[in-house]
Image (cartoon, rainbow, N blue to C red; front, side, top):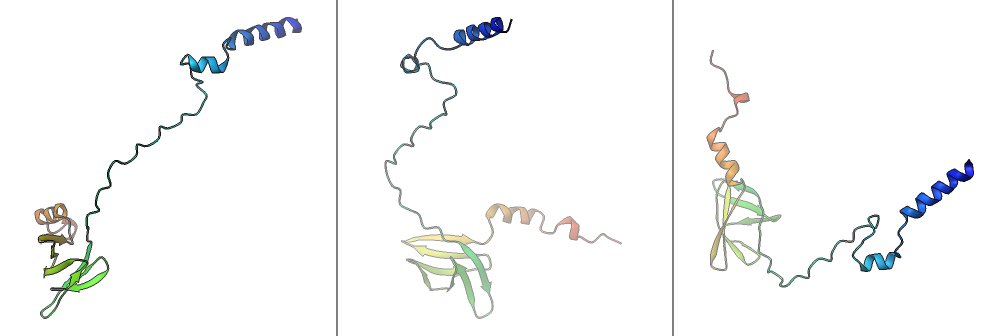
Length: 131
């Protein structure tokens, strides 16, 4: 009885094993489903783009006699240079730079956030209820 079970198991295993050698199977387009997927190599870059200058305005202070801003960690005043740009104007929430004949406006607040603040400048949690 045990010999008969062993015979059946061997017949089933023999039937399940491929009759074609693995190299021949791959040549016929049959891949091993247990083999890990190898990602295709990334395409080589064709051209290197020039980096654009992106300044980060982090602080502005406007007082009666002084206007200062912090751009990329550097304290600047109107007329100062940062890189090859000149600070032409400092306002309460923005700085205007002139760079290569172009003007660039740096703002502290993203324009989308500024529009939201104009719609509802005072949150409802801070409003006082009428008595």
